Structures are given as C-alpha cells and as structure tokens.
Length: 94
Image (cartoon, rainbow, N blue to C red; front, side):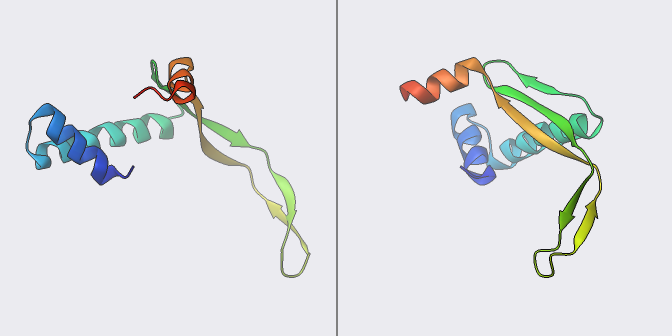
C-alpha cells in the first residue's frame, strides 16, 4: 500500500474530497515524524509502537577495499507490531 492508496481510501470511507484526505494523512505523518525526531515514541493502540533507537558506533569495512572504516553512532526508527495487529495478520482478518 502506498500513501496515495491510503489517501484514496480515507477519502472514500470518510466521504471527503481527496485534497482534504491528503492533508489529513500528511498531518498525521508529519506529526509522527516530529515526535520521533524529538525522541518520543508514537503508540497506536491496536497497531503498534514507533520509536527511535540508537545504533552504537562500530568499525565496519569498505566492501571494495576491505579497509576498516569507523561508522558513527546513529539514530534509527524502529516499529514493534502490537498484539492485535499480529493476531489480525495471523488469522487473515481484514
């Protein structure tokens, strides 16, 4: 599913113009991204939790030369599916 698919579905199910659905979806995604950028977790009950985790600094290697390269510490988004979502996937429920 793409963001365009999501926008179309929201517009159809809510009976609103596509432009309004597009704005609503963008606001939700922007707010989620802002919260994650601030280091906060986003919990959607029945769906899952998005949070930012830190990857430790490490020594990697250049794949072409094999020379060791220092890889700095980084932050990355992580998603943990909620119990209800996992159950829906397992049973094939809509």
